[in-house]
Every structure is written in C-alpha cells, then in structure tokens.
Image 1 (cartoon, rainbow, N blue to C red):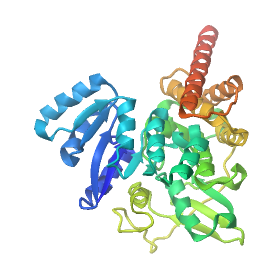
Image 2: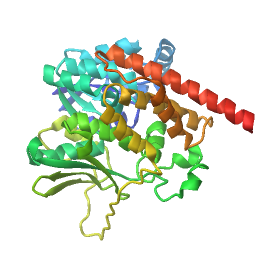
Image 3: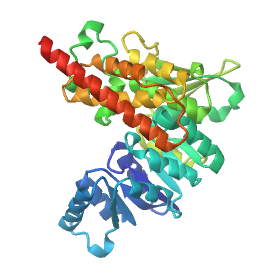
Image 4: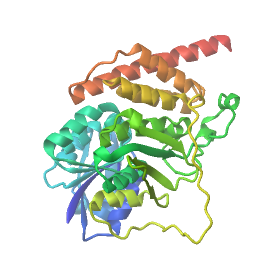
Length: 398
C-alpha cells in the first residue's frame, strides 16, 4: 500500500486525485491533506479519507475547520492533527511514512514543500508548474542527487512522458506540446483590448482555477509548459514547439530523428495522468471515458500567433536567458493576472506589466530555494508598482 500526501487537496487536481484513490482503497492510504481556505470541502475529505494530518493556510482557518468538523459530526477521536502554514506543508511532504506527494498547490506556495519531498527521494506527482518554472535547475539537480521520481500530472507533459518511453533521449528530434488556443484563438486583435475577465474565464475545453484559465487565454500557460518541459525532459528550448489543437485530444507529440512522430491521445480527463503518475511504470484500468473510433473525427493543428499572444514568445526568451528570468516571469504574470481579474488593468496590459517587470529585475543565478523566493518577492513588488502606476495614469487620462 502506498501512502500519500496531497498538497492542494481541495483544488481541481486534488479532488481528481482523491477520486482516483477512492477507487482503490486497498492500494492507497492518505497521510496528509493540505488545503488553503476551503474548510467545507476539506472537512468532508477528512471525514472520508481519515488522514493523519490536515493543513490549512492560517490559524484562523484552522479554527474554522474545527468548527466545520464538529458541524458535520466527525467525532474528535477521528480528527487528524490540524496544522497551518508553510512549515506544516514541508513536514507533511517530507514525512518518512509518505511514499508519494501530489504537488497541486498553485503558485510558489507549494515550492518549498515539493523541493523537500524531492530531497527525501520520494515520488512526486507534479501538477504545480511554478516548481520548475521558478526553480527548475535546483529541483532537477535534487532529483538527480537524491534519486527522486518526478512524474508530471499536466496532461501535456504526462503525454510527452508516455511518448518518450518509445526511444532514447538522444533519438529525440523535438517535443510538440498542444494548446487549445483558449477562448480568443479566433478573436481579432483589436477586440482583445476589450476582453473582460468574465469572457477570459470561459475556457472552451477545461475547467480550471481562475489564474490558469487566464494564462490559457493569453497562452502564458503554454509558455510555462515549454519551460517545464525543458527541465523535465532535459531539452533545449529550441527543441520544444507549441501547436494549436482546438480539439484537445492529442496532448503531446514526440518526433524522433528518423521522422517518426508518436502522439499521446486520450479523453480530456485529468484522472488518467494522475493515475499514470501513481502507477508508473505499470498501467491499470482508469476511471476515464474511452475514445470511440467509430465516430467521425476532425483534428486541427496550426501554429500559434506569437504577435497576438506575445507572452508565449516571452516565455521562450526567458528560458533561453536562463537564471532567474523564468522566476521573474511567473511572479510578474501572477500579479498582472490578479490585477486583470480585479478590474485594475486590461487584458493586453498583462503582457506589458510582465515585460516591464522583466526589464527592471536583473537576471541572476539562484543557488537556494530561499534565493528563488527572494527573487519571486522582489519581482512581485516591481509588478505591483507597475500596476499601481498604470492605474494612476489611466485615472488621470480618464
């Protein structure tokens, strides 16, 4: 039986992970569930999975969780240890009784705990892009040093992982990641300036959190995936390409030197890559719909428009630059997306804030996770100042 810690248990990846575990009670046991502030859902998860430890964002939220456990009649002898804060996340990730850590906390909040799990040689099911975008070199060095396993849960990287099993690393010509193109793939350029948060949150294929949905609308999310793929699979950035594939059925393709192209194809259901990360190298029946090959199908593939979606191009440039550039890219984007969702800036201004932040924060080589977190903090500060300046300028000209 494998014992797991789930970081981000109340989010989309976390709830899908628990559904996979639910279907194999004899194969998996939950040691810790970590959430942010969603105490209602966390309480029901605790009642069902009976973890030894539960972690929330703050002490105030911990008190609210106690109230919720009482309200749904979970007897106190069945309560887990209740903790809060980053140090508790780290402890739950590095606990010796844990075999697998599902890293699904959005943002750099999950970075330190995931890094500590890697340093303990654990298997990590990685759904948190920021871990490798912000600290790819440090994390992958630790994977090599401590013999950890990093199994991607993102559908594109999981698909690439499966395709890469067919050949040797030196036989790979290029990796191709697919993108749905988001809700604005056919929107004329002038109309993008008028996009509202409500429109940008209407993703045509996936149901995700707000930030990742906006990042999908700008193609920044695909840029992060390019960076992540370079680190996961040891590829230079020029060997990772992106194609728009609106049907979101082909998740990744690998072209080998002999011209053969292998594709990973499956239904758009995150439970398949989650189960793959748990059972690799074996495969078992998954709780996902099978594709019907009796139905007529049309698959489209075309290149992304880097002029309309310049954040994807910026991601390539940052990965090529190396050092702290990608950490700054992520931090600035998170601030800019939050400002857009809050109605403070326009859709196209997201790119402008990110680009200007990169121009103001010097690129350097982080040597520790603390260095990465400091670069992240500095970059966020610069991005917030730029947002405030833009708001003041817009207010004066209004």
